[in-house]
Image (cartoon, rainbow, N blue to C red):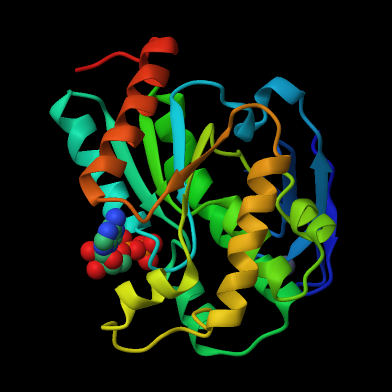
Length: 258
Ligand SMILES: Nc1ncnc2c1ncn2[C@@H]1O[C@H](COP(=O)(O)OP(=O)(O)O)[C@@H](O)[C@H]1O
Ligand SMILES: [Mg+2]
Ligand SMILES: [Zn+2]
C-alpha cells in the first residue's frame, strides 16, 4: 500500500499524488502533493545516469555567432540560414536572450552582474530545453545569434567571475562551432548608430573590453571550436567563408538533407 502523509493544511491523513519533473541536469524531481488542496508535502531529487542527461546530445550541428554589437551577427545568421535552406538542410535559428521576459529585465534595469548571469543562464536553459536540444536530437542544424560565450565575455566584463559564469551554466550544451565576428569597436558602433536607443552594453570602453575578452576566450578554448572572422570585410565574403566551414562540418557528421 502507498504511504499516507499528513497534510498540515487539510489536517488529515491523505494518500498523496506524485508528480515527476525531469530537470535539465538529468535528475528527476519527485514531488509529493496533497490530492485535496495541492500543497507540496515532500520533494525528492534523484540523479539518473549520465548518458540520459539532456545536454549530452551528440547529434546535429550547433553553430553560434559571437561578437560585439554591430559586428554583423544577425546579418550572418540570416545569410547562413538562407544558404542552408537552399541546400535542403533542416535548420532552426534562435537568438539569445530568448524570452521577452528576460529581455525586459536585462535591457531596462540596472541589476547586479551576478543576477544577470543567472537570468541569462535561466533563459538559456529554457531555450535549450524547448528548442535547441530537441532540434539537435532530430539531427538538425541550429544557428544561434549569441551563446554561452556571450555571457562569458559580457558578464565578466561587468565584473562577474568567469568561474561563477561557468558554474551557473554547467549543464549547458556548448556550440560545436563559434564564429567570432571581430572588428574595431568604432566600426561596429558606426554601423549601429542609426539604431534608436543604444542598450547599456553599447558604450565604447565597455565594448573594447568585451572585444578583447572574446579574442582571449577564442585563443584559450582548445579544439577548433572558435573561428575568428575578420568582420570588416564585405557581407557576402564573410557569408561565403562561414558557409564553407559549416557545409564541411555537415558532411563530416553525415547530417542528412531533405
Ligand atoms: N560586413 C558588413 N559590412 C558592412 N555593414 C554590415 C556588415 N555586416 C552587417 N552590416 C550592417 O551593420 C548593421 C549591424 O549588423 P547586425 O547584423 O545587426 O549586427 P549585430 O547583430 O552583430 O548587432 C546592419 O545595418 C547591417 O546591415
Ligand atoms: Mg543582432
Ligand atoms: Zn491538503
